[in-house]
Structures are given as structure tokens and as C-alpha cells.
Image (cartoon, chains in turn brown, orange):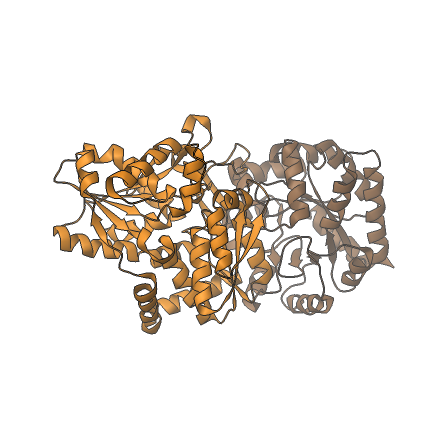
Length: 266
Length: 374
């Protein structure tokens, strides 16, 4: 059975087009707005949506996403409400949706209950940055059985052995973290990223998406020359922070997403 | 993951290396001042009217707490790994001071992350770290305490992993940290065992230590794990009482979860968000406990109790008056539990309490609590 993520990458590959994967924090500024933003981004050129699940201690994230997480928690966003949101969205959009969550909320929810409800809600993949595959065997094998992708991360410090292992275990795509660091930092050396992507391609034919530190259309375009997908998070979250719960927010984010996509396809 | 794997293999190699062990022993003896005394607290014993009480005087270590046992070990390891920069988190400031001290002695660059709430409570230690040449980086996110300082240190380490070693201060975090830090702190229990055998010709009946992350407790307990008749009691921070919700008693009120790369008991809400904690003592004010404590607790080998802020302050007063020893507020929690425990033991019984640190750093705060202007 081919799922939405595989289908999207396959379709894009046949067109020679890289995927644009915008990230927003679910519940920032509120869940209703998150729903609107997903629909808008899907209409403005996003190919996959990454939805952040807020967590009190997001150690892989820089200040921008930390603050978004705090705002979302203040608004009482939770894993179960986010699953409900995705289920509602599925009546309107078929864009692949990936949840980016830390492990503890999943563990608390119950691993198998979470995987089952994620699938029935219409979630297509999971990114859990603080769960190395060695520690997440139960979750990974159960998810794969239910056709829910587990997207694993590689970093500049990943060894050959690690690249081989993660390439093999990751499904949907491989998330390459462009630099050693946290989300929202500055990405300086794109050549380094290209070299590492070439190395990873020696181990796998799966799509490779690059995230961390990509903040404008020029950078997105440069990465898009050699990667299968470009993930932009903090730059969008910053726009949400600046605009807040204002009627103009959806339009602002939509235009930014459109400018990213345009840069990547021309 | 690669950084943890690298650390593990370097540590295991160092552990087997006699040269490394000799070097560590040398600095612990000549610089830290080990072995620390095991002191029979006669007046306290008489006052409580039960078991004979021995205090393991970690407060007499250079920099005033057990923390330097670990910092020294990890600084030597840092040198061995060829890294030039050290980062650490600190709650009460004792681990920060110990790390800044060890780094100064070896000329390593040192940056310490500390929550702004803790910087206020432990202003003296902030100044000490700066005097020692360390940069103290305020952490103003979340609860602005130890947990958030660890978050920031981990973010730094992820960013600068090629040049930097992260000296975690307690038996927390991902493997190999809990194991390695336990090993470095086990010197406490190994000494205590030798000392009590010399003094009493037998094993103690009970060990008591406060538990934040749990490194001083694990350091004392671990060498006694196979002594079946030795009870071990860790004392958590009861804060304003369990009912109040303002405490850091993970075993009394927590559940299993994952934080900072380890699965253990922690304080969390129904959505798995980490709960805010409270304790009069910054060093115990942390929502998770070292995973090995959880392991031994579930095995029934180690027991856990808690002491409230008020009980800790009373114990602080008691030890000052009865023994002329001013304990750290962290260690005062162990004394507070001892006050309840010792009278239930016969006079022929022996209890060893780990006096993990001295209270000089807490003088300002205790004065504030008592409403005394200095």
C-alpha cells in the first residue's frame, strides 16, 4: 500500500521538482488558526506539512520554536486535540501531514494507542527527535505495520555506519539536519550539506529532505538543487509570532510559502 | 548519538587505564582533599536517642560538596579526548563551581548554564564561578531552574559537539552519563565502607542521602548494593508538601516518562508535559530522578522518602547547633529524614548520612527565610 508521503515524492520526482515542507507549531496561535494555515499552505505550494506538537522541554529547538511551544501550551494544545485537528483537516485536504513530537507526550498517551489514533486521524508520518531508533523499536515496527512513516534524522556528525542504519530504517523520507545545532540557527555552509547528501545517497534511494537553518527563498532554492525536500520551520514560526492571531496571518504565511516554492522551482 | 557513543568508548577505555585512574586518585587526594572523614556525630546521636549516627563529610571537599568528584573525573576525561571547551549546567551552583574550579586548574575554557531563578537563590555561587574564570550563561526559559539549564547545555552540546565536552553534574541524562557519574561518585561509598569497617568492625544498618538527580546518594549507596542487610534511603524534596503540588518528590508523586534522554520517574501532567517543581533547595529542584534510582526503587533495593522545606530548615538549624556543622540545604533534607528515622532504631544500630555539601552558599537564603536582614 502506498501512502500519501510516498505518493507525493514519487509524483514530484517524476516532475523533477523538490518538495517544500513547511513546519508550524500546532496550537500557535491557536488550533483553529493552525487548521486554516495548513489549508492555506497546501494551496500555496506546500507539498508536505510538518506539524509540531508542543512540549515543555524541546531540546532540539531554538528560541523561536521554544516560544511557539510555550504559546501553544498556554492555549491548552495537546496531542489528542492535535489528532482531532488532523482528522478534521482530512475532510478538506489530502496533503501529507507529519507530526514532529518529542517522545514523552507519546509515551504518556500510550505508544500503540497513539500510533493507531494517528493513523485513523490521517497522520502520515512521525518525527521524534529524542527517540533514537535503538530505543524506539516497538513504536517503529508497530507504525510500519500500520503504514505510518517513521522519519529518522541524520546529522553532519553521523558516521558511515549510522548513515547506513538510518537510511535503511527511515521510511517516507530521511530528514537531514543541515548542521550541528538546533532549529532556527544560521546555516552557513551549503557545500557541506551537498557533500553529506551525496554520501547518504550512496546508501539509499529514499528521498532526502534537509531542514534546520533554511530561512528564505534563496537558501531554499540552493538546497533544492540537490535535495528532494526542503524543510522550513523557524522562519515561518517567526512570522506567526510577529503577526499573532490576526486576520492577515493566513495571507502572510501563504505568501511566504508561495515565495519559497517559487524560488525552488525556477 | 555519535557523541554519546564516542564518550562511552573513551570513558570505558579510561576506566581500564591504570594511568588514568592513578591520575584521578592523585588529584582527588592532593587537590580535592580525599578521603573525607566519616565522623561520629555524638551530640546528634544523643539528641535523637537512637542509632549511632555517622556523617560522611563530603562538605569538606574542595569547593564544598561532592560535586567535584565527578567534575574532576570528567575534566581529566575531557583532556584525554583532546577537547578544549567545557560546558555544564548547575542548579545550586555547586556543580558549576566544581566544574569551573577543575577547568581553571587545567586551563580549559568553561561555560556554565544556570536558570535565572537559581542565579537569584545562589548569587554567591554565581560570583564564585565568575571569579574562577567561567562564563555563567543565564537561562530564562521554562521554569528558569536546573531542568532548563540542562536543556540549554544540551542545545549547546549539540551545536558544538566537535570541540566541547558537556560535564553533566548528576546521574542523569542519556547513557553513559548515569553510569560514568555513578562511578566517579562511588568513591564516597567505597571510602565509607572502609572507614566504617575500621571504626565499627561491621557494616552500617542504614544509609541516608538526599536525592535531586541523585549523584551523592548513588555515590554512597552503590558500593553497598550487594550488602543485603544495609538499608538505603534517598530523601527527595517535599517542598511545601505533596498535597500542595509544589515539590520535587518524583517517587512520591511521579510516574514513568522520558526526559533528557533517559526513562525514569518524573513529574508530569496528563499530557506528558513536564511539571514545574519547587524546593527551598535549588539542587533538589528537578522534575526527574537518575534512572538507576528508579531501577533500584522498583527492585525494592532502595527506598525513598521526602522532607519538606520547613523540615529541611529545622534540620539545618539542628545540625548547626548540635554539631557545629552548617549543611547545604540539599543535605539538610537527609538530616531532616534522619531526625524521624534515628529514634526508631536501637542504640546498637548504625546510620551513615551523606553530608553532601556545606551550607555557606545558603546563608543568604536561610536569612531571608527567617526574615533576617544581613
